[in-house]
Length: 395
Image (cartoon, rainbow, N blue to C red):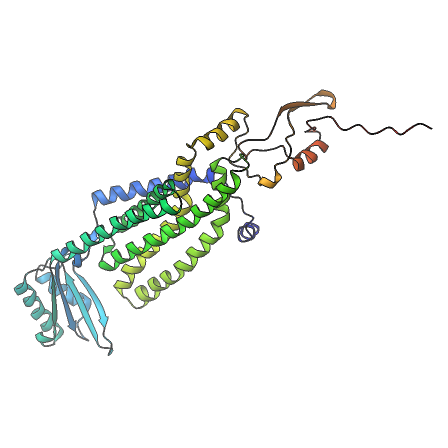
């Protein structure tokens, strides 16, 4: 509870530079698994993309198993999908899909067999035939919209923030897309038009969370660069700790209705279209908040640390042996430089080492507050001799 309280009070200081190695390892495993599954298994495309026939049979007696038996006798049982549906008047029916059936005469024959099995008139059975060209058109339109979206986002972020942040945001975006598609491939989930809509929707959320993080990093960089003490890794760490609570709260609020749709619509009311819509949103939202905190920031740091300004700061810190991205020192605690102790000498004297601030800003152990405490413990001594007391006049 203490860690949770510090998190929501804004006092958290998690060591993100150290955690990144674990985050990137997890992300690497997921990406490799997604690529292998996509190459080996592909995607389980719905009838809307492959083409086929859909029969809707109004019946109170025919079961799902009996409908599958009718399709199996017609040689269309493989990959068939049968779903119970209820209309607005409360009448029960079956919705039957078969991707293998694309011939009109064949579809009519299966409709007659279903009507006979259900004990209804064949004219009451509705037939919808879907050609593969319709699915191909949806795919082409979705890819076109995705490309235009990415290009516009790149130029917009470059204009509002900077181009390095655009690259990092696009990398995180591709990370989310690959993992989401990989989950559908690994678990053989059906890809429907609702899935495509959800897929395009999650891209906006992922970018929103990433831009919030980058905006805070840009603000902190402008403020902390005046000290000349902070590497960009330290700036990034501070920024992530500041926006962590907001990112988690936003994600939780966004996930609650998605989980409700999945549980109530998909599992309680058995609406497959709700499952198709909610699963993609659920996977995408989780991947989006992960990438905004664990993928986009280290990519940005990779570019920023190669700028001349930050290279000099890091080089000075390395030369003094004070580089430590695992510590955060607030800028207001930088005081006048004091000497740093190399070792404790024999006989109670103190051996004074090098002097000066830590130019990395993340490993500073010499500031006025810490020096005062350390001097009492016999670890530090001031960088200049104490001011002599004035001698009073002798009378």
